Length: 160
Image 1 (cartoon, rainbow, N blue to C red):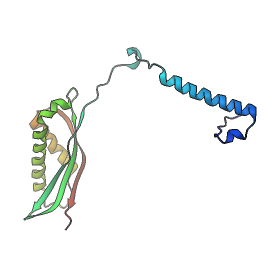
Image 2 (image 1 turned 135 degrees about the vertical axis):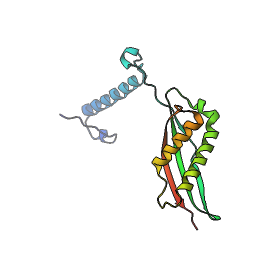
Image 3 (image 1 turned 60 degrees about the vertical axis):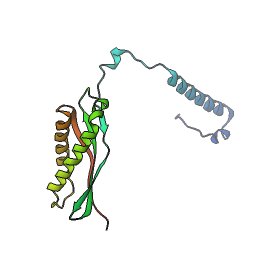
Image 4 (image 1 turned 120 degrees about the vertical axis):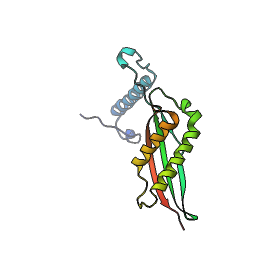
């Protein structure tokens, strides 16, 4: 015989013995859940294995740049960047240089866009990533940022 789950309204339709069994089963399930919630987790070092040190990720503020051609803004370009720091490095260590790094990123993006302004294609995320990695190595020193992750790179025409 298979297990049958009864809704609260269906319990009124079944007989006394079956109803008592269904209620007892429900109470056992609730009690088992309560015991499982309050059980102490096993924290022995032998069973867990060595701790894995995860890298630190730092979300930078999005960079949105107006692209000026002639005397008017024709489009905007932007990137959303996350920095993966080398193992052992922290966001607190980055903080004193964060503004200088952001300014260097903006300068590098303006240079990149100026060099590719005749190109009809949107920003090349791979090329942007490589240039921002080189910029972070120059500003923070090699080995501080493991990888620059470009979450989004976009170019939008300006609405008339």
